[in-house]
Image 1 (spheres, one colour):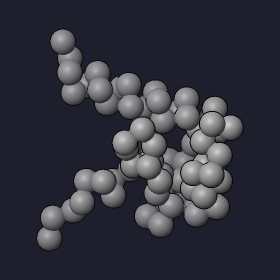
Image 2 (cartoon, helix red, strand yellow):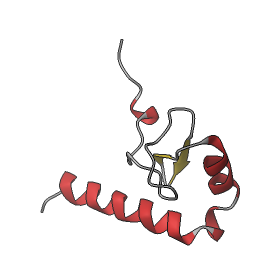
Image 3 (tube, one colour):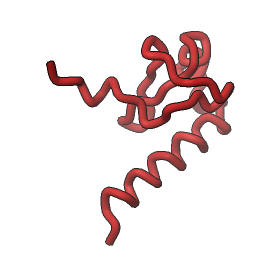
Image 4 (cartoon, helix red, strand yellow):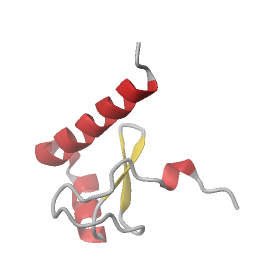
Length: 73
């Protein structure tokens, strides 16, 4: 069975706790799937993205790193 790429988080660890990402705690950010350690963190982020600069900086850095690896020019 083929895995849906949209269900694969760009991060392995929660930006808040440092714990591993849980499969039931995924959200979308800037067109990417991001993960948290639990549904509470996910729901809080999704409801207050603009008010969570620490989370968004973490995800923005991962997105930049991924884009640089994908286009090394």
